[in-house]
Length: 151
Image 1: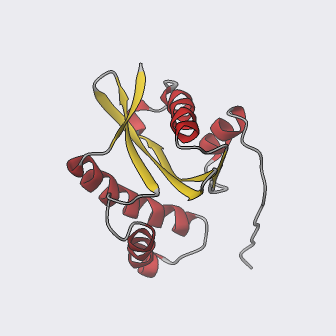
Image 2: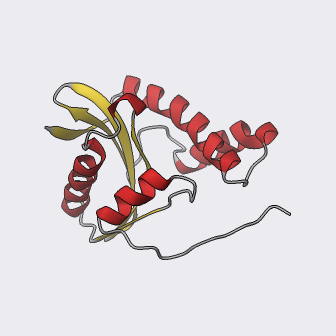
Image 3: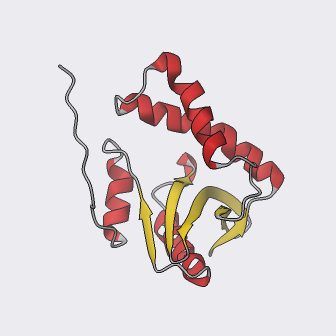
């Protein structure tokens, strides 16, 4: 069984250090940032979006559990009274490919509806084909595509 629970302080500390590094890697892989600047820019992004750490009114940071095992994290932000945005979603590598992502997304949608949201957006890096496939299976539709070419 998959359940989402509000992150406790220790889970948040684990998450934020992982997330800053992971986001920096994705921005490098997508060609948006150089390796020299990536960690600093990533840290700045998280500080801007989560100025008070895990304690924010519009940000809902949850730990994803399979039974009692922590398998991932999800961060949903309430952008408007009826609209949310998934800033981050991760199933830890050793638990990927076991259906936890799809189940966690369904649970996140239930929580979003309970918060009054009737629409959820997200961004996915073009190089992340596994995540793109999951979101498409879950009914997310492409709203914008940004393309680039190194010359």
